[in-house]
Image (cartoon, rainbow, N blue to C red):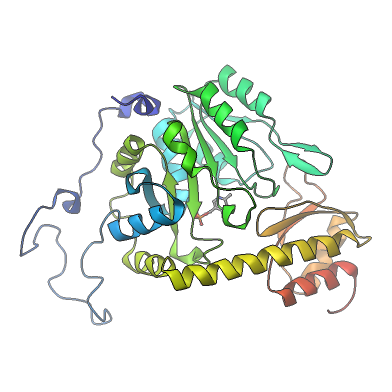
Amino acid sequence: MSAILALLREDLRDFEGYRSARSEAGQGLHWLNANESPRANACDQGARLRRYPEPQPETLRSALASVYGCHPNQLLLGRGSDEPIDLLVRTLCRPGLDAVLVTPPVFGMYAASARLQGAPLLEVPLRDDGGEFSVDFDAVTDTAQAHSARLVFLCSPGNPAGAPVAADDVLALAGALRGHALVVVDEAYVEFADTPSLIERIGRCDNLAVLRTLSKAHALAAARIGSLVAHPDLVERLRRYQAPYPIAEPSARHALAALQPMALAATGLGVAMVRRERERLRRALATLPAVRHAYPSQGNFLLVRFVDVDDAWRRLLRAGIVVRDMRAMPQLGDALRISIGTPEQNDRVLAAVAGRSGP
Ligand SMILES: *Cc1c(COP(=O)(O)O)cnc(C)c1O
């Protein structure tokens, strides 16, 4: 057994998972094994929806693997990256025993999945030094070792903190936890960052995994296409524990179209616009008296502290602008997270925060 499979819940190690009709299929002319309809629905032009889809559409898997720079057998397709997060927690952590480590303030899904599974949650807060957040890697390593963490979730660039984590620190952490925990780096925003993805490091570090998504830079949030990139043995096993047909055919079709060269070029232009606007908005916000601090960000959002955050929230709402409320998050009682919009929307944000009526 591959060493990485020792990270699976012990009671699952010889469990094959559900076998769908599709996973048992061989060769044939007349497919009467899955209780599908012999005729297409009247609305289904082209009869694409009559049959169950491929569990892991191979053309999409290969296309994503080539964009992400990995082998297709290292990539598990999911319904967004939220599904692999949940799948990892459920299959690696025994309730009440194997812990999930997170670094708040951070994306809430890791803790939500841990809670649903009954997995203990370990929290190692980000440090906020000199106006920039960073992961306390010594504390993460010590806490993970002392309290049997099975999964460590890092977010790079961090949501909502905006800062990337250093590759060397992640690799050292994974090395220290080898055989005990999987280190998962959520790269939902890496397309907007100056730092490269850690995917190419996975081949030499078997307890490292990376999450990617088409929801942010690729503008396909409603298609729900995310990926886990990890050791092929782990991917193969998770695929058997996943829902039988996770990837809807229309979603797979749109995702594949989004990975063609013309669409990728347009995505690249969109990312460049967001990066320019991110810096423009941050500089402009930083000059406003209402703003205490606008954090540097490698994502498509800005984390902003306000002198009077309740007033800023009300002024934005009055201008019809809905931003993400961070006030209930640890360390962020005076902060809001603002997604980068169009240049015109960003001007409206500036006007609202400055107390002007319009741009
Ligand atoms: C938005 C976001 C996701 C969710 O991605 P989906 O692929 O849409 O599920 C994952 N991680 C982080 C940190 C995010 O901000």
